[in-house]
Image (cartoon, rainbow, N blue to C red):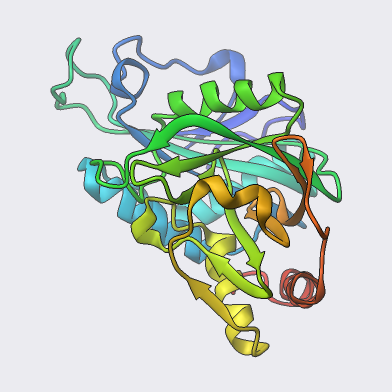
Length: 287
């Protein structure tokens, strides 16, 4: 049994132990640090319980398998999430689970060390009721080796989000190599065009978001017609309305694209989805 740690904002779980941030030792040869050989999941916890944990864990499994990484069993990671939130005194928290390749040579080849597994928590960031987005002049490669994986190789997202902030927006929207609408840096996107609710298919290169999947299921249950089809990125400013989905944002309407106000902020479909998603979060911690 690990020694209890006094509540702080600096307690993390590393390879099975609760540690103060200053006591954590990560090798400078860790393959995640050197090459981005790592995967992660971000969750929201309420009452110290991570929401939709099973869905996040299954995606972590899929991402890790593609990198040849082993991850702790679900029960161990679920307990680690609860312990970290509790140790940091956070009833509601942002939880991140990161798994890297561990110590390795100074190159792309993997080493023989065990993985580094980190669970960290922090306060939930404030999310406004509506958001502004810009499209960025960089394309997602829907044919790339990392399509559909949630990896620590986030360089493109860092650059794109900085571009968005420089242009007065809170999120950046990528097209793919084919010129079709893809995703945000940390979100999926839904649009209403000519009265039809549409989201890019996973074949467009977007991440299979947990909140995206929940919204797809909610649309089916509520008889809200949803099409998963390709649409041109350059038509985004002409849609009726749009919204983002993500773990931290939930379901968030878009007010403007590239500085242009959309025709509507909200709408009947969004109202139904937001209400259903709110009920789901309230009554089903692991949907």
